Each structure stands twice: as C-alpha cells, then as structure tokens.
Length: 79
Image (cartoon, rainbow, N blue to C red; front, side, top):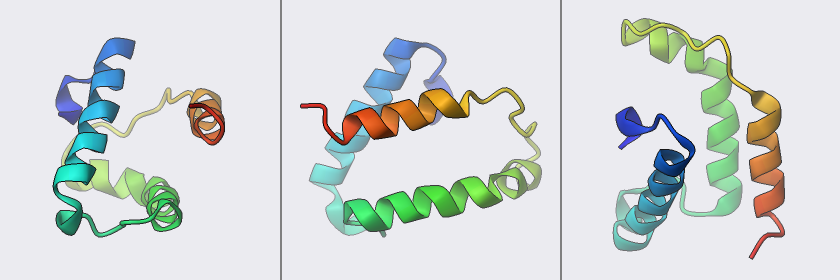
C-alpha cells in the first residue's frame, strides 16, 4: 500500500485501507489504542533515517512536517 502513495487521493486511500486493516485484523496490530499508536508514530519518526538507510532507500529530505502536524491535529476534532 505504501509504495503506491504519490498523490493526495493515494494518501486518502492508504489511510482508509489502514483503518480497514485495523478493523479486520486488530490482533495483528501491536498498537491497539490511539495513545500507543501515536507514541509508536513518534518513536518511528525519531529513528526513521535508520530504516531508510537499512533498506538501502534514500532518506526523505523534503517532508512537510507542518502539513502532517495539521492532519493529526485536525483529525482530533474532525468528524
């Protein structure tokens, strides 16, 4: 799923699929609560350079962190 995300619509589909996967396969998820999931997101971002290096992929340089923060904050209240 992740490899196909290039456009806004791809990202929307990815998030919807991620939600569906959680609903259908909750037992395969390590983080089953919002707080543990968000903590895992923060931990992964902190060490993500190592992931890309270990996978022989370029480390992303142009991530718009403000937009990601806006998405997470807005979803707190958005219905």
